[in-house]
Amino acid sequence: MSGLQAGSASARSAGDPATGTGCSSYGTVTLDTTRNTTTGLYELDDPRRGNHRTYDMKGATSGNGTLFTDADNVWCEGGRQSAGVDAHYVQAVVWDYYLGTHGRKGVHGDGRGTCSRVHYGNNYANAFWDSGSGCMTYGDGAGNGRTVITIETGAHEMTHGVTAATANLTYSGESGGLNEATSTIFAAAAEFFANNPADPGDYLTGERTDVSGTTATGWMDKPSKDGRSKDYWYPGIGGIDVHYSSGPANHFFYLLAEGSGPKVVNGVPYDSPTYDGKPVKGIGRSAAERIWYRALTTRMTSNTDYAAARGATLRAAADLHGASSNEYATVAAAWAAVNVK
Ligand code: ASN
Ligand code: ZN
Image 1 (cartoon, rainbow, N blue to C red):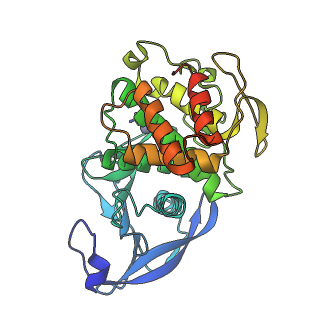
Image 2: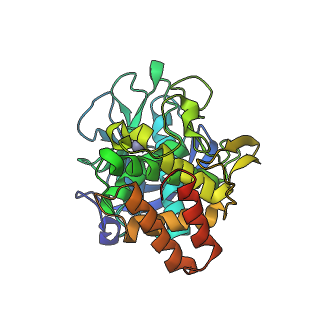
């Protein structure tokens, strides 16, 4: 079964591809698993996505923990297995987003899966991409309620891995804000792609997690609604936390996709302002996400700042649509609308 080992980070015993069923917080889902021919147990090891594996950290904050296993491939025991089911499902959705929309095979673009680690720490109400292990990592949330695992958070963290493997935007200063925005942008895009009625696509962050109640924690149409993020670029924005300096880029993406002013998308009302008061007419999310992806993977580098991101996205738009296209002109207009000229 050497084919199954392709891309695996460590040696593993032989197994057969299997299709399981998971009881997830998104309802009943299909899980791609592997049947270990030595133990006979099914493992959260996705043979269709580069052997991406999902581990139980059991409260630890280092190491990979234990690969989830199940005797009958019906993953509905609940308890600590539930977080594993959610994380394994979410990685499949995000993998399929990157492959289906951008032709990208996994974080590294080479077909290798990575890993998800769940039950990280205690009361840890966050998730992160861990560059050491190369795993998306999830806490159990406040009160260990485990709802930090969503399509949005999985896509956000996996995208930190994609960014590290491509532009490698330094996680501080303006490049750090662009790194954060890249994760927020593709998290929104993946959520729309998933089209899951339990979690419709939106330009919000944190709307499904329990970290601060039931309302959203972020708004791409008007980032300042969170009380801290910036709507517009200004000299010195690189000095603030990257989650707040990401605001103008999130805002740029919203404007590029949907345009300025009031708009309802999937039942969620938005109202996006512009720096100069001029209206922007969006080019649609499909074109916008492809422009950002091309800029990220072919034009941005570790020290790209806002001015350079403008140049990178303009070149990407020219590559994809031509320099005299409406898409190109709208990229310029959307940057002007967040005060990047
Ligand atoms: N969830 C956060 C993020 O990915 C963790 C962090 O601050 N890096 O942005
Ligand atoms: Zn992030």
